[in-house]
Length: 390
Image (cartoon, rainbow, N blue to C red; front, side, top):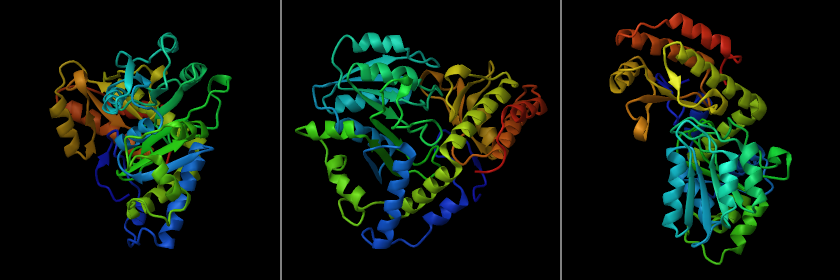
């Protein structure tokens, strides 16, 4: 890999050379049939990943654009949205909904905990909600949502299921053909970005709609958007030689290669790998007196939010670690200064993570904490069961 640093934040994530090589290809015109063929293949690979019977949208933008697309194309002003929030990024749906005149209610979990099925059922029984948002893996807390519990109760009450997969897609199961919870309960929309578990540089908003969600769009008499109106994008997704807005040509090259790698590994294998990475990283860091705020039973496969031992200086730790070539992220909101966040997803390898565990221990020793790096790396290797690069 080209990168010299170990970029182990919750996104962007490490990019492999074949993706960089694709990104660096000559820029073709956005209506050139050669580019259209690549774009079409990227779209088809996205449909295969999500297993959707509807449409997917791969356009220039961030995950926030994808969130906006999901809301404005399904919920009218004055209709009700329920936000299931497991942290900072779940809360973002509140402001997004309010910006478009949507009546937003929220169930907020204690950070590090899951929202319970019973709490959702109780809230849904109080009113008619058009849709419910679920953050699959909240980037602020490292908590994963339980789709087998949540999706069925949402569908039982007739609401759309909108899944924020920004920090989960291509690493945690998001199968739009699956009936979750053993009943006829399916995800209607999945939204994500290019820069996390897919492992492509930032800049693409990716959204998948099933037929139920597409019907919801057709029933809207007004959509308060132009760029984010899926009706403007459907003709381009079906024939990429058509024009609506200029796509990021080189990023589409990179994304097409990134999706090739995802599907070549196989989603089942990829999910198992990410589960193993998360378990091994959290287990190894516990040898240093560090603790994930999410219990293992609710922990995301893609990132972890790790509490420091008492008295550790956040800035001093992350600065010293960065000088060794390992970049991790600070925590958000009330956890700022008390924890750090480490990504273990996408193109990240066992070798990268093992090296990071050793250097974290080395840094702690330099800061006056006596920790056993050998014990930590041995535990990491005992818990992880996939070796080698992606």
